[in-house]
Image (cartoon, rainbow, N blue to C red; front, side, top):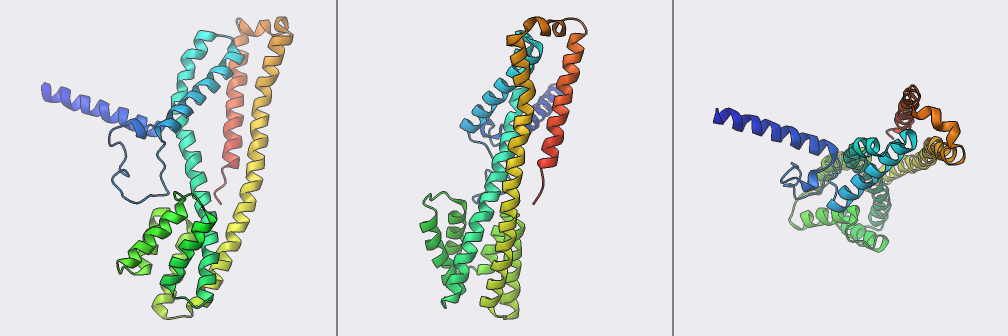
Length: 285
């Protein structure tokens, strides 16, 4: 009986742990992430800091509470249902992860241009990476910038007589970014075949740079449309608050009897529109 109870408690704890991880609460769970033991950063996963975690929960709670209160004018109901804001860190975590990956892409494009210039000046590939690191330090003053840390890792491995292909392959596997993988593949193929390294790097940096430029333009257009979508989602709530303040008698029938069904249907329709707009805007570039 005791063993069965211990097993059930273990299962309950694992379920709670999975739920907390799904919500984005890894930072307050003991050893909650398999990535904590990894010494190098991975760009397919993002763990919120405690400040980011609690601020996103607070914002999620307040937003849900205000939306529900504007619809139902029920303080108690809004407080209870707004507990769903505990899942807000999941959305925040994904947004920060996407931003970090996009920033790494842009930083990598700048590093490619510097690397090509160093190779054209007659430097060896290893010295070109060291020179690129110094150039990136001038461009990015924050030492925590991802591209600076990654090039420091590469240079450190070079100092320990590790092949450049191995160091870059590890970066590509941790980043899982198509442009970085393509660059590493091109570099590895050139090193194996003994081709013209400078010409290959020029062509690779040009092609990848043009692709990243197009990606940046698309992201700017998407950001504009996302902003417009947020405004469209805010308009019904602004309209409701205006009517509740300017014409409370006109809105009174909605807060009794079948009026709650109408409000619930409208609220669900708004949620469906929000989900659809978010799905349309979630374009993988």
